[in-house]
Image (cartoon, rainbow over all chains, first blue to last red; front, side, top):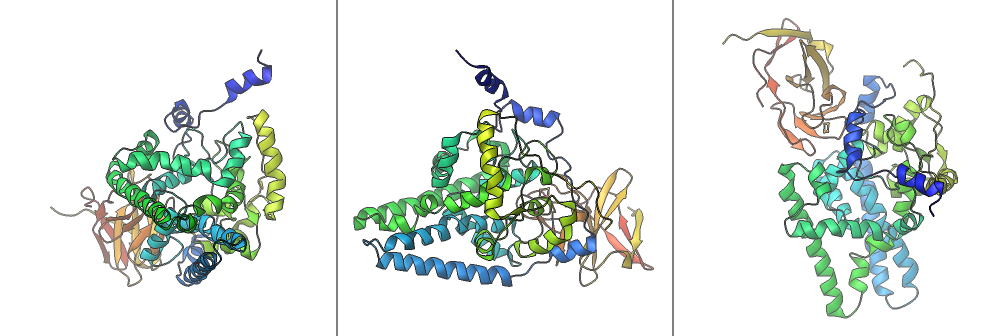
Length: 355
Length: 110
Ligand code: FES
């Protein structure tokens, strides 16, 4: 016999597919490519905040790649000993977590002033995170158009009601990588999934197929190398860190929107800004200023702290560190497992200071 | 064909390396001034998701859309980076007696 709560869930369970009925409902409700709330920032100040620079991103990228190569080399030297374990943990985070923020900033094309540098970092990050770069560029554009709009946003990390086991598996990277291979394999044989067809324009489809083939080829090369040397070591260095190094990207990523409102046109209600220390901000490339990033995507990562100061009077108070954010997120997601209508209501300042 | 010039603003009414929104009749346009004081005009809405380009970022001769960072060359309207893949219409611009005017006599040329 089903309980009232169970039957309620059947009614309340929403359809997050981009090709389902919720996509039509979102359109009817005026939630598609809608006008979003923006905090007032004088144009002159906005121009300053949008300025680009190569220096911060080159500095951070050099540090990142040097650390990646150094820990990779150390892991190779220590292979077969327990000492390699902590080294692989660090290497994995540099690959499967830092790759995410570099993918993201490179994709927006704002990290560097020089365009090819953004492209190079984007492609490197795409492979590290097992994301076919062409279709993900378009899916991320959709995420920005229709942020946490059910039936429209392909990047809603936690759907309601919360599936706790699936949520925990996100820290292993398995659901993300399996979902990506479900796209990569058809792409390799020249087919797109229905979801990709929804957000990928015709002019981009062959590019997506080519990129998918290149990604799969690199995986095949890493697997072949492992078979030839009779050791999983090559795969531990190229390929598998997308799984074992992704946990910290999930820790960061869940702070962005999990537990907050769906179907609202104000990023202050559906995204979080979290204060973080310098190490986390280096690894995450300032994406902790997530409300500001969504509201003004043309502001580069290095200018987000200044933007945060500029708009803070018009923002809900930021969360105090990862702990502060998770104190809210964990109970909210547990509650959403039983009550999919529940969400955290963010207090939005009612009075905007004259700019 | 004689061009129908429409007055937009004073030449100094737009900053160097910046963009200005200009609405005329039922359409919207974007006027650009480059760092070396050249003026260009294009359609005002991004071809990707119809967002006003006047809120975007001008760098050199590129306008970056404020919504998804799509890029266009302001000198010819060419789309330069995904998710902008369709070119913008362009309109002739002249500066005369300290005023910027654009010609809207025809559909923009991309
Ligand atoms: S609206 Fe301009 S790039 Fe999407």
